[in-house]
Length: 140
Image 1 (cartoon, helix red, strand yellow):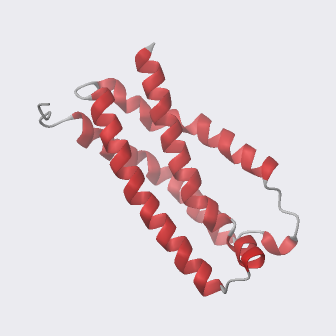
Image 2: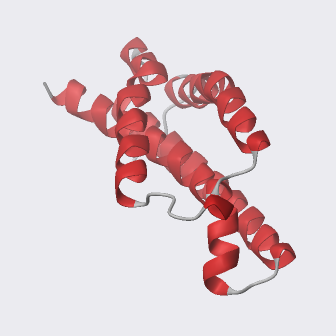
């Protein structure tokens, strides 16, 4: 039961990572309209936030995978365990932050990037899991 809880925690964090990565990109025009910033400023800050999120979440997912699942093959279930949590986050987003103005719709290319990320993200999780569960364990 503890393994299932740990696996669920990793699945939630993986889903949250992908969700937070695309949240500012999907709401680009809304952020521009609400804040009054120029599109260049919003683009720059979106890139900074996404890069910082990528680094922080990669390190934290590596450390948690290393701590919870070192030497265990069950860690690879995290490759697919993020999907239901991600779907719940997307549904909650559509319910809590509805698009009320037609100008707030994301660009069509944003959807293509999201679809591409759904295929690349499991490879990314697999690599983190592979590096975290193999190798030498640090002695405490």
